[in-house]
Length: 144
Image (cartoon, rainbow, N blue to C red; front, side, top):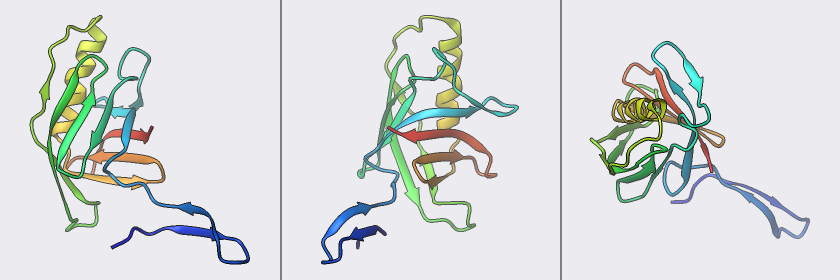
């Protein structure tokens, strides 16, 4: 099975450029926005701007809260309701470094809670959006 792709070829049929869609796995995703409880807001310097996540093909997650490293397991499935493929992130393990400030510590708690509330995801261009069971946006990432 091959992924959908767009191939631009010269007049002899030689491929010049090949465009493939982004996939969930084997890409490092950098957090760009999160659900603050009242709105989806852009991350701020020293408050989420270093948060990342990556998913591998074996069902493992690795990333950073900007303070600590996170790791765990996930399960990806099909979509029954058209909201996007299902994505369940199991409780995460985390290193235990102290945050340099209270904002970073509070953000870390919000970030990991939002990850663990994830029920599905959407890919659009180089953007990954994680949503809850109701389809509400929780976290937005850009491919690094």
